[in-house]
Amino acid sequence: MYNRTMNSKNIDWKNLGFDYMELPYRYRAYFREGSWQEQGLTEQSHLTLSEASTGLHYGQQGYEGLKAYRTKEGSIQLFRPEENAKRLQETCRRLAMPEVPTEMFVDAVKQVVLANEDFVPPYETGATLYLRPLIIGVGGMLGVQSAKEFLFTIFAMPVGVYFNKNKGNKKFVIAHEDDRVAPKGTGHIKAGGNYGGSIQTIEQAHEKGYDGVLYLDSKTHEYVEEAGSANVFGISKTGKLITPNSTSILPSITKYSLLQLARERFDLEVIEEPIPLDQLDSFEEMSACGTAAVVTSIGQVDDLKYGKSYHYKTEDTLSQKLKNELLGIQFGDIQAPERWIVKVK
Ligand code: PLP
Ligand code: COI
Image (cartoon, rainbow, N blue to C red; front, side, top):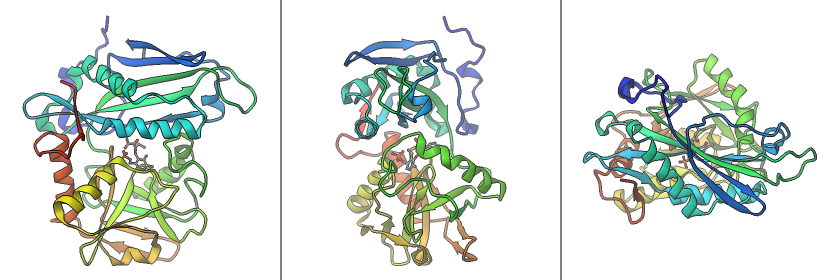
């Protein structure tokens, strides 16, 4: 049985960052000979893989990120998990991996949440249980080809804020030197390969005191695309919500939820369009959004190549109102649009 020293009673829920924590249970399934074979929950946190796994050599892998929320009444719920299942299916298609059916995905997420229930943070802390589904080609292959076997696993850990919460005014820098993805590559799916090349970039940005990186389109370097781990949107000086559209950014479930709320509940005009760099000047607010990032106001964007700094409002903002609506829905305090909330318990 589980006997590691880490215990949910020792967790400082209010001061959690975004770090790995080894919880008691995770879910496993293997795709072999044409079908998924579910193994269910296990306490084994380490994997044993063929050294020739395609996931290790050729990046044949993809992942997801979603959260479980504790409500005021103590129940537990998920936010739009079917959307994560669908996005993982898109990732699987693009990388020639077998799709994980939606029902299997959502059911597995629920199993992991319930098994680790003690680690779903209390409502009043604002923390959540983050779930990380991962699919990886594991059969031994030497040529560049699809694996014959795949592992699908989901593990979980309690998390707090993603971007440094000890720093009020978040500063981002425009990545002129590095691209995240190619125009017709894999930017629209959640493939680990999209992130490998961003690690050096974000580390260098951190060294210079930045909290995040804003990538440009890799074809012309003239348009804003997204942050390395979140989408972005701006609120124009005329009160419109404007966000980049591009086939090489990840379709953020958080962002599309915010866009819907902006239209339906705040009567905002929402525009998805290519955003040239100089349009950054027309924004009054700018935010990063995603499951991990939630909605994080960006106070400053520096363009070191052209020697420009853009400054944005971070207090008493429309973005904050949208964030509160979203969080209210996710934690069960505000009525959700139909089918957004899936109860676990
Ligand atoms: N963009 C990137 C590159 C991401 O890694 C993420 C995180 O999942 C997002 C955007 C936000 O997507 P979502 O809101 O579905 O979490
Ligand atoms: C998420 O928001 O779920 C993500 O996957 C972002 C990740 C790169 C930390």
